[in-house]
Structure formats: C-alpha cells, structure tokens
Amino acid sequence: MRYVSTRGQAPARDFSSVLLAGLAEDGGLFMPESWPVFSAAEWRALRGLPYAELAARVMAPFTEGSLPGDTLRLMTQRAYAGFGHAATAPLVQIEPQIFALELFHGPTLAFKDMAMQLLGQLFDHVLAERGERVTIVGATSGDTGSAAIEACRDRDNIDVVILHPEGRTSAVQRRQMTTVLSPNIHNIALQGSFDDCQDLVKAMFNDAPFRQEMRLSAVNSINWARIAAQVPYYVAAALALGAPERPVAVAVPTGNFGNVLAAWVARRMGLPIERLIVGANRNDILARFLASNDMSVHGVAPSLSPSMDIQVSSNFERLLFELLGRDAAATTDTMQRFRAEGRMPVPDEAWRRATALFHGFTLSDEGTLEEIRRLHRDSAYLADPHTAIGVAAARAHRPEKGIPVIVAATAHPAKFPEAVEKATGFRPPLPPRMADLYAREERFAVLPNDLEAVEAVVRGHARRNSH
Image 1 (cartoon, one colour):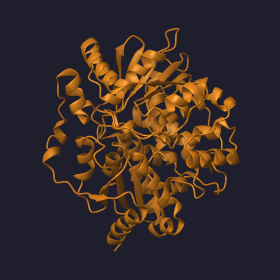
Image 2: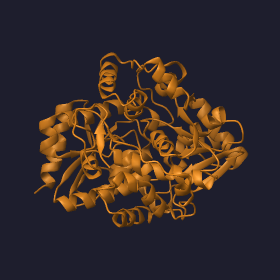
Image 3: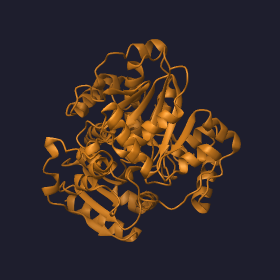
Image 4: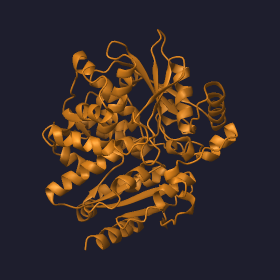
C-alpha cells in the first residue's frame, strides 16, 4: 500500500514512512493511493473474532508492504491486552435501535486509546528496525494527549511534547497528562485555544529545518495510522448488529473529524454504513457546513464537552480531497483560501455529495445536561457530555426502516465528573487504578501562543534526552 498527499506535492510513501512523517512536507495529509474493498464473504469471516484479531485483519491492507501479518497481529494483541473490558469495545443497547459503542475501556478512559495503544507499538517497531529516534509533538483538546503519553511513556526512541489549551480541559484530562513524570514526556499549557495549539504543531512541521533537526513526528489524527487503527471498532460493531446483510448508521460526537472519518473509511471499504451523523456542541462549524455549506470559522467557545471545542477540523481535508475527486490542486487552493479568509469555499456539487451521507446536529450545554439526565433516568446509562451529544444526534437523525445506530461513546463519565454530577446528582468515581490521580505531582510549562517559545522548549527537551 502506497500513500499520497492531499496536496499532491509530496512523494508517495509506504505505511511505515507515513507513520513516522505524520504530516506531508507540502502541508497535506496522507491518504491511501487506492482503497481496499472487502467482499461480503470477507466481512462475514470476521464475525466472532477476538477484537485484536479482527483489528489486525482489517488493518492489514493498509500496512501491506511494511509489516508482516504476524507482526501486526502480535502488536494488536499487546495493544488491547490491558483494556478494562473483555470485549475491548463492548456494544450496549441504550434505547430502541440505538447502541453505545464503548470506546473508553483503555488506560486513559477515552476512545483515543483504541488507536494510540497500537501506535505506541508501531512506533517502537519501526524506529527499532531503522535505528532512529523521533520527537512527537501533538496538540490536544483533552484526550489525545493523555492517550499519546500513556502509549509512549518510557520508550527509548521517542520524546513526546504535548500542547493543551490552558484551563480548557477537565481537571482529570489535564492531570492524566501532567502527572506522568517519565523523562521522555513534557507537557505545555498554552495560553490560547486548541486551534492555537494545533496551529503551532502544524507550524513546527512546516518549519523544515526545525522538523528535520528534531525529527518531528505526529500522533494527532493528522497521522494516517490513527485513522487506520480506528476503523476496526466500527467493523466489529456493525458485524455484531448484522452487517454485511444489515445496514447500520453511525453517530459520532465530533471535534477534529478523525473518528467519524474512520467510519467513512469503513464504508469506503464496503461496510454497509447508510448514514454518518456528526454531533457538535456550540462550536458547530461542521454542523453549519452540512446544513448550509457554511464552513466559516468563529471563535472557539468553551463548553461542557471540551474535546469538541474546535473550529478547524484537520481531518476534514481528507474528506474534501475525496469530495473534489482527489484533485490535489483544488484541495490545496481550497485549504489555502480557508486559512486566509476563515471560510472554506466548497463547490455546491461537492457539498451535496457530502450531505447525501453526512448529517449534522448541534446541542447546547443545557441540552447536553438534559440528555445526560434523561439517559440516566430512562436507561440507567451514565454518559459523559460528548457521548450524550452523540446519542441526541442519533435520535434526531436515525434512519427509518429499523436501521440500528451505533453511537461512539468516546469517554468514561468519570473524566467529566462535574458535568455528570450537575446533571444526575451522582459523581462518577475514577476506576481504582486512577483513584489517587488528584494526589499525584503535576509537571508542565505554561507558555504564550508563540512559535519561537514553543520550539525552544521542544528543542531543549529533545536534546536533553538524546544524550
């Protein structure tokens, strides 16, 4: 399998090279040169497999030529061995035709673990094979950072620097990052929004001398390996609900568009996903785009669902590339105009193609609390704010004909205890392995929204560890 950039000016690469590169040199995102498609018989053959085995088989076409099948299978077994549920990603019915796909049973209680635990294995293998060292820089709105840190802590060939927006994550999210005192981990609290963090990460990648000096790599969902590792859980859930004979719909609380894009990839591979439902909070750029072709940036407003407090959804560029018929020049022009003008000029024909499959939904903080309360009262289900938005979106846009909707339950309710307690009167406890989280020592630097200042900290961290 070879990969090309959405902007067409970077050389094609294999999976291992894409893993280490993260962002393409031309500022684009890597996409498979062609899409693998499974037959109905091949989907049926995956039914009933343990999750790690299913994940290895679904991902195999994307790693072909870089990883032997047995090596990938060993990695998936290691990645999911420590999850807190025997099913890894269990499916729970919460009302007629709506099912929660619980993706939060990993070490940091969020869906990011589903991909990140495997990415840690992949990085270790490829770097050891090449005798190389990398510096991972990442931006997080709350969950990616802790999942990346947990996956990469204490690894010999990896340094990690994670930027989070100061004061805009939950206390649990922040402490899961800042209390990891491993020497290869460094946290930066940036005085700005998540979009500012993400912009600085992209700026570091686009600073060619710095990128080469630090051997930068990425674990945000700009890294294709993250998307590939998220496809299997949609496959597992759809098969459990009767696919490929029975179509399904998927609802995803969405920030950076990576999680819902993984469901789109599963559909592109032949899985019968009839509808993709995008849930948003007050930062509703994706819902506005789907409603009226209005992809315009407003200010980022803090909410009860901070992982979705995003205006620039990086992974949308991958879908745009497909909507524009894989025209790299048109994709580049559209993205550059979006960056310059704050509004994305998507042609009406491409927008109509998107709305034939994707449906948007927006829920306020008040509506989110009411949804958490309703789920707890009517279904005895405790949902975090992000999952609650996903459920409300599923109910608003569920297809007719009895097609089941899979809701991505993206975080454990204990990651957002204040919101859950406000809605239900019940404060969800952390699992025993995290019970002392609030007593642990924190370590992080507070920095201004300034590229030079951030690069200096990244350089100092990487150089200290390279000796």
